[in-house]
Image (cartoon, rainbow, N blue to C red; front, side, top):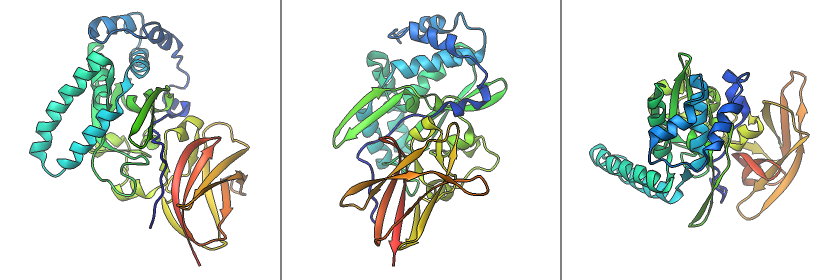
Length: 336
């Protein structure tokens, strides 16, 4: 089956619904302090930490200030990420060679971080872990698979991402500072990073986080029943913007499925917040793209849906959109 994907690599955002554990907590003071020290050096972490945390009372506020500052001041180095992925593929089945490369690579990442404030996921999480240590906040760097339009799409190819588990009020929570920091736009060999802070990967609830993060150690799903690798990649591919708008294709909606010609496709939706009046579907048959504005409707059980019908046979990539923003992708094969 042909699969047609976006030319834009979306590494973006999540929503305030991810903070449901602290929905009554006011982070304005922590954010303001972090914003006040925008542009500060990372050459002296003790001074940076004192500036960010000295006037905050709780671990939650301190972690928020650290997280907010890192995500607004450290740039995602996409070229370094591409280089790392080449070596991950090369050494995937050679654990000794991989460990040797990884040690040298981590030093390179941290050097780039301290000198240029540019890094990749392992640099983001290492920096946050060091700052957490200075505050006595327990955390764990988690390695695993991130699913995007270019990685781990229909199977788990190789581990390609790192994020953070943090312990607050005797409970563990998940955060991804790399994907909170902004977006990498990729067009061919060119790539551009833009800062765009998104709250949703901050203390994200585990079920939401598991839609595009798969840890090597299943403990760090923080779920009683973790998904299998097959279940993980069999669901519709979702992007960070899904969580920014609080609009989800319902869990377990298939990434690939077949329909008969003129059969209606019903897409079940969940909303964490206001229900929009309409959404868009971009339909790509590999030769051209066209867009449909689709209405949202609700059945007698209170389940929301979008629906569309295909009058032609063929393979299609469907992209759910809010305005011009891609939320999710799935594949449809229309048969006679």
